[in-house]
Length: 265
Length: 252
Figure 1: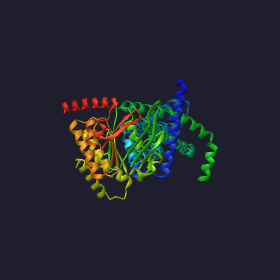
Figure 2: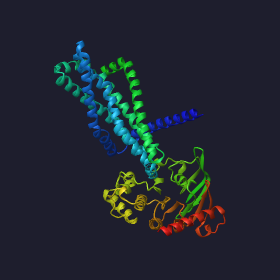
Figure 3: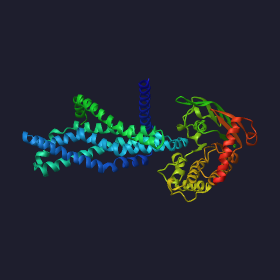
């Protein structure tokens, strides 16, 4: 009985969540929110996340380079260090780590802010003034998040490669051209597209889950705390699961995407 | 004219409204009394369209507000305003932005000078002139209620709903809020519905009083007649209310 009730409740929440995504998409296309609101969110999600994304990307790049060089040099494969760092950052670690950082810094704050607004009747007050909270509060965050996440991911990758270069060249005395020369040959547009597609989808996941949990918060201050923790845990889990699914999907569509890219460019 | 017919609302297993009916005439103030948790605030939420009832309807000036998408119908909502129990000021915005919020959202062509003038006038009316730059957290509970009222009266609605306007306030501040409700009614010639369990407030602002019990309006009458109604439930409510009134007087 309890399992049936839980299943029904979860399915109901999932339905509400999907409905919210469709409504926000519809609003973003048909009646986009004011540019001022989108700009403020781009600053909040993007610019203010730059330091933490830089630190994460840079340190991950350094660790990757250190491990790659250490593990590969005795097998005569040290020249693959640059390629490993760059590939790993572009297709996997850049998008995932950036999404994790944004979830922790922005998603949690977003959920807590909307949750507080919900329990203190501010969202109801907005509705009573004929202002749609989805258009005023969620759509600007949604648009800003989906634009900014890919940009932050590119920034994270650049920082990661820079960190890797620093360790490989300055610490392990690897020749600079050994690190950089393989990159143009083996890093493809497909790798870049993979990272960007993942970042875009992670952006949608982070913003919609955080906003949905915030907008449906109940139970005062304790409820806000619960909703925030819950949204962060769900975001992390969904990002990891969807990362696997997107990777499989993109790899299986590799030929098709490459043909499409060749056709376009 | 507000007409409420056969209004039903359920939350999970709890049936809150059970076929509630109510008529409110233009320009009058109806106070809805009742114990905590009987669904008085729920009724206001149906009236202003924040929530949809399970059954029944609310008609405001001939328009069934329960049957339209209020977000899409700004023109209907323009005539309604609500003062929330918690004030519900947007705590990330200064008071000036809170009060001008409606105008900036729905009248983008208004000049900044005009918006500023209307905000100043509304704040002046509630006795908060010069607080435009203050944040809601800088204000006391009573001031926050007044600022929230300024946010409503800035767009001059013809129907104002008050959810527990004096709850949590000391007797003197509560009296100021009551005076403000009467002043706002006079200034805007607005119809008002006040939900409260504060008898003193009810007698000061109400033209008619209604008693909400178990999801229905049990009694509604002009205030002099209301006090004479012979009903044990009402007597019990009056008795408790007079105890709190006398406690308020002693504390005040």
